Image 1 (cartoon, rainbow, N blue to C red):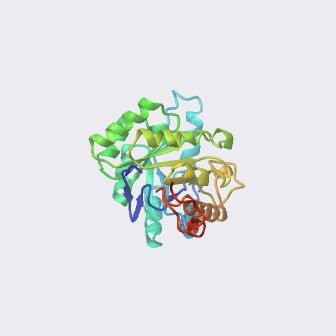
Image 2 (image 1 turned 30 degrees about the vertical axis):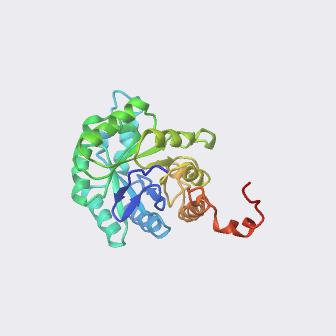
Image 3 (image 1 turned 90 degrees about the horizontal axis):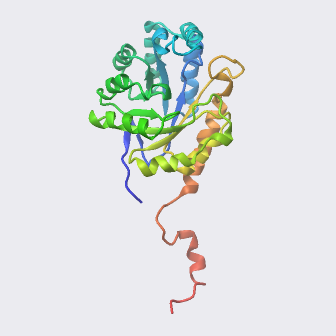
Length: 287
């Protein structure tokens, strides 16, 4: 099997022959509640997420209200859910204090610099930002791992993003993603993972927006070495991504399923397997 590049994020190495890296996307599911954000951090870490992902932004810089008719409403919501930099800093410190490894999606260059000061172990380029080349360049210049979501992007747009990372020697991971929130399982298009693996030599993962835990193990079987899932502690809330995000118990269930699939996938080399030894005696001799 072709040896693919590996990418190290904190103490975790993402690659084909490594344990699948589980990312809990906390995003803005806290809805601006500081205590809820702390609970999310603790629960995601305790239930087995390898990495926790924040979103770091300034609301008025995140959407173009003139271009998008809903932009003004999104900015209003994001403003309500946005923490002060002081509170954000406290959340980063809390996550580190309990031993969690954190990275973030910065949505503007000031937010990137703040996240850099907080010690973000990597950076996520959200699907909405993959064509934001000025932000991509700023991120790549940090030379930390870049996790690129390919949601909505075509071949050229993915290639352009990868070339920016290559130019500045920033290691990268590409996540297959369908940008629909929530996503019906039948539209997961997991074969795109095969296509991305054939085209790029970096680790390929999957950012899943379907409810529940059925799709991530299938993505692992298709070749994903990172799984990202939106996470919540208040699934009954309709705001943000809460209503289709996984709960702490579902995160633990997903981790179990993924680890089982890793075992089932086994060894890629086509050789006699130990469990076949008993039947070996019944084989005919070569004639």
